[in-house]
Image 1 (cartoon, rainbow, N blue to C red):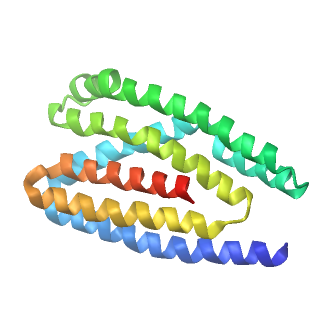
Image 2: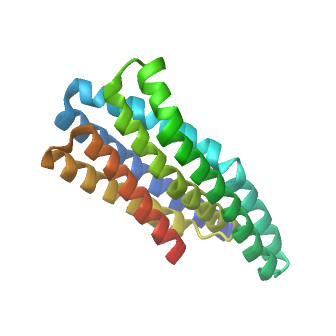
Length: 199
């Protein structure tokens, strides 16, 4: 047990250092390619993504991790699997509802009423497309943590960050500006979610 804990902690620690560097690279590229106004709009937009990801997950990833670890400790693999399926169903439902609300209700309110910046409307709406993928990812990362497969968390984070940077930069260079950067984020999350499901 001690070896698993040390190994898992070391994997997550090294992964966090690498992803901090990747995060810096992403922010540097976005600031360089989008300029001050575009970077500001992207920053506002991405803050909503974090809020909605937290709301959609509803605190389930740590609970998934806890219960899976308990069921795996007594070799009850069926209950561990059922925990994942039930939690993911709940999280996907909440993610889809919040995503639809974000696109059709919250984004127009935020852009036109609270922020009074209509140019933020489409990027904030696109954030609604990230929510279902981010909750699947969060739930499965909780499951990976419950079975001490920290390397799977690192793999999914690597896919998320790599493709987010590649697609965001590519779309910006194609002339899509902030909208392209946000779509790059959607693709990064989607590919990471598919990777987590595959694993």
